[in-house]
Amino acid sequence: MRIQKALAIPALGGYYNEDLAAIRAGAKPDGLFYSDRPQSPGFHAIRQPSEAASIILVLDDGRIAFGDALSVDYAAAGGRPGLFSAERQVPLLNAICGDIEGQPVGGFVEMCEALEASTSWEDLHRPAAMFGFSQAFLQAVAMERQVTAAEVVADEFDTSVSTAAIPLGIQCGEYRRDAVDK
Image (tube, rainbow, N blue to C red; front, side, top):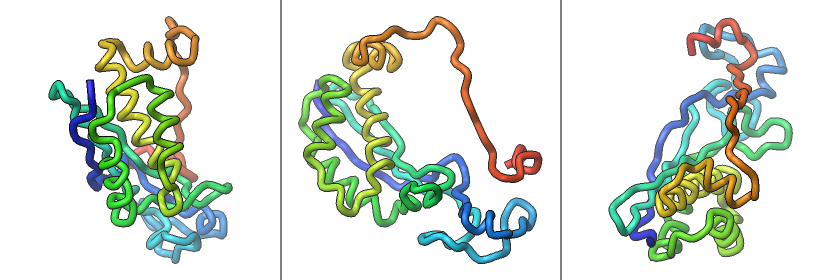
């Protein structure tokens, strides 16, 4: 199986990016948002919808694998890279998409390592880009092998799929009681 077509399109994340520096400096909430000015580079508001890019891989058998490239909730805090800007990143991601078209769907780790080795990361939001491409690669490999993504990961990292529920940690921002409705 090969990647027949690859593209990146602008999207929105399923959460808000928050300027943690401004919040910690005493910004006061105004409903679900803040009326104070942001302090971290790239923010136009203290709380703003997250931007993303969907990485779409059309496989030569007609199936479609995808992943989302986006930044974390508290981008630019704690040493994390800044915000993901779809406007700036989608053209760069589409250049990578052009490079991977026609490539075979191989191993998951192999595909990720090849992408990391062959890509100039100078202007790319590297964590976001690798997150999106790795999700798409994982789905493509699972489709090619006709197994679940969990089985691909277990196989490639020489472990087994859990038979018990795995607890998940979630968070909803500094004002937890108010954030439930978000």
